[in-house]
Length: 137
Image (tube, rainbow, N blue to C red; front, side, top):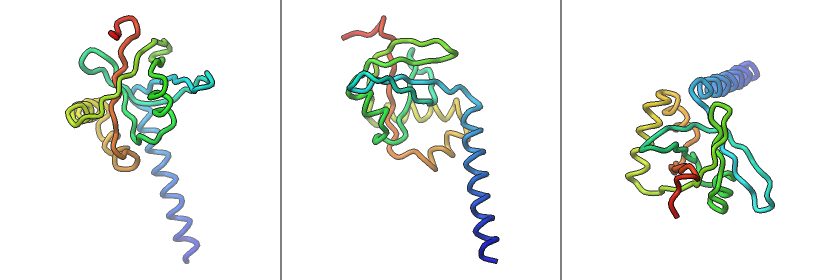
């Protein structure tokens, strides 16, 4: 009896994980290329929204490795629709930016954004990606 219950619980968790992953892939998923100190390029899949004239991403948990690399080396590449664009990443760790971007992501990704937030998001921080050609010093 306990084995069946444990197996049922395990299968339910696997199904929830699979459905969550599938749902998260149904709206645009971009790739962000960051560079490590040794020059190695790392590519991370994430959601993106256009807000106030630029693309924005969010780090769900500020301890993520890609975010640490971005903070060390803010020159990144955003890949959307197979096209890479050099950008300068600007972290906006203030309540107004968080609220605005939470709303933009919620509008674009809907219920899935809420679900991911419930499961994974801890103090999400918005990151503005300013195209390198228009970035001001």
